[in-house]
Amino acid sequence: MNRPESSMDRIATLVSCSSACPRSIGAVLIDAGRLSIFEAEQILRRQKEQGNRFGDAGIELGLLDAEDIRFALASQFEYPYLPAGDTRLSGELVAAYAPSSPVVEQMRALRSQLMLRWLDVESRRKALAIVSPKHGEGRSFIAANLAIVFSQLGERTLLIDADLRTPRQHQLFKLGERTGLSGLLSGRASFDAVTRIPALLGLSVLPAGVVPPNPQELLGRPAFNEVLKTLSRDYDVIIIDTPAASDCADALTVAALAGSALPIARNDHSSMSELAELASSLQQSGTLLVGSVLNDTRGNE
Image 1: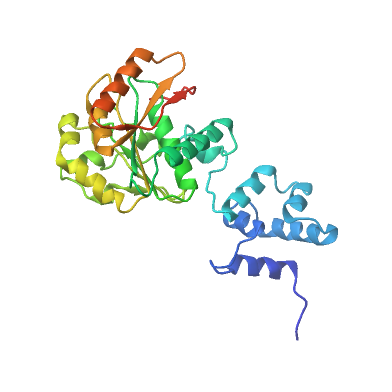
Image 2 (image 1 turned 135 degrees about the horizontal axis):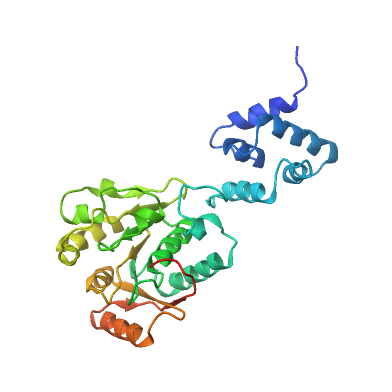
């Protein structure tokens, strides 16, 4: 005997729907552990009684909040970001946690400018070195968050930590101590050192790896150019973090091999004369300067 479909039947159908089936807000929140099946049934019942939307009904019942709705919509539109309180990545990765913040809006504006001025299919430019004269100017912060916003656009994005002196990307992405670029350049590691970031669709990171005694020599080897060529086949955008240019020649070496560089300065911290000197050195090495960024944040490096 056939029986009427209940709310629980609808939830069961929603949960068991194949991956090809568009997921509703309720399904997204259940899968993420932000909503129980019993709570979803309550919301469905209120939704049926009042004829309003699932999210509105959930908020009225106090079972959902605005952050839950934003999270579900981001999942539906394949725009990955992490909810507040998630500790999988460092809080400095604002593009992963606060997509509506003014800082991230500025990152998107920078992304748009780079797509117009640098990322060019015809020129085949893919690699961009983030450089600055001194410590504390925000290179690692800008590199990491810029890589995230490119991946959120749907670009296959790779972030390389080429600071083989004081690397930070493994800390920001909480990758722990593992093999990385130094191992690849010394022949001690394979391309398995590239790590996918599961929480952020389309983003991979190649950490610096073990800090070597000879970073300048490693980065100057032909192997680095070969690594970039190989990785360029698999990624649309490659963002490269570098050490402070005033400390060593590493940044100039990396930028020359990448072919393009984005100089960073920090408000009330950077010296314009040092920045001009860095820009001149980059141009003399044949590196394309794609603009500059005045960083007002206080993130390390």
